[in-house]
Image (tube, rainbow, N blue to C red; front, side, top):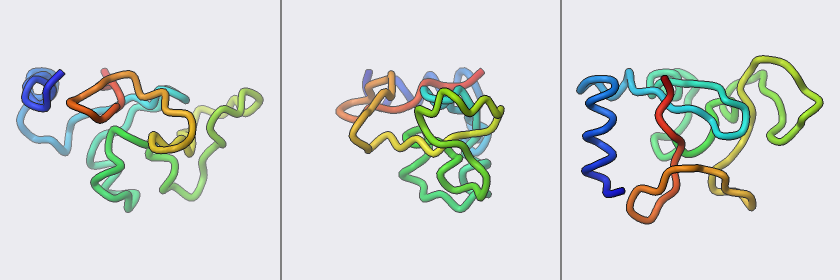
Length: 98
């Protein structure tokens, strides 16, 4: 999908205020808004690309199937294993959260 198509889909789902757009981590399933990333101190390039848990003091390890806590993980989309499901132009990103 193109960036324009992706932006149109985001606006259709969440409105024009991008701070309220939601993204679902493909590893742990945690849903975070852009505002959540900002509050955690994450760089803007991380939104919808890496789990917000990377910037939180308490998180679980990505791909740790034994940790059953319902908290975000430290998955990084730019790491060795990229499971981001949506391709926007040439970058893979998280799907929108619902």
